[in-house]
Image (cartoon, rainbow, N blue to C red; front, top):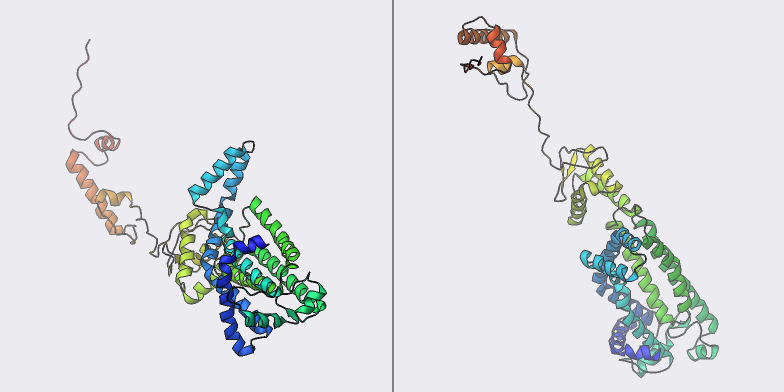
Length: 422
């Protein structure tokens, strides 16, 4: 552990400086030697670090969803090249490169926190060993050693001996009870965070090995925290419990407002969004329009929840536009609930077919008017037809000439046939 601590010594001074600055603020309120002052300083350090890591958290969400999308393709590659590990790895790397996906992006927040975690561990271990570190001088060292959280010193561990705990002005029972409770809370918060992700924010329409791995990690991670937690000082347990609670709350916010497509959380979100649109007649902000825009752009590739959302809007006379806006109008919806038209203009009506007498007389009715002829119109049409036939052929209408013309022969003078050779 000394080698690891020395490797992260470059960040020990900044971490100790941040803790001392927060301690100055909280010490003026609760007293410089109290556990509240030092405990809240550690909590504030966690919050500051997690705020700085929000961009990495967003990248982690995108990477996780991209990996979920690629799972069917990855499974095909594994089955195709199951006897050729090298070719399998090459195809996997090519798939990651073509899609711009990085499997390590989902681990970025944990990796980024590691230096701060080890630096804090080294700071608290130095306090327990009665050694100054960073900007923590002799006076701050004595103040930190006096600080207790529910009777347990910040630098005490579950595995410490009774003599070492007595040197920190505490009892072994208090230390073990406090550390055990914090380890249980830390493991439960980790389990709930992972379970929340698996039960609400995973696409249930795709069954992949990735889901089985996540389920396994849901039970493995809490056990790992419990095993290693007995070797963490109380201050480090405060740090890790705080970051678990922050992760849980941050994930709840993401699941509630930006769920994974195809998940139960998306079904609940689209139901809330549909009620809001029906109540207010439109979307409320840019984020909602972005989600509707993505749904419209999918076309026939929409999942069950998205088709139900589009169908619900159409039944209430609303149309989701390509830019994410929702307006009043009519839309063409297939039997499976897929919207194939997204315009607010009424559907174009085809002109009605004219009758035979109308086509012969050259009378054209405008669209939307009845095409049936009145009695006088019918008589005039018949008269015009008879007069035209009599004038053009010199015979009474309806004769053989007209019949031939109607049968498809050419009108006008016919070319004489050549006499046959005998």
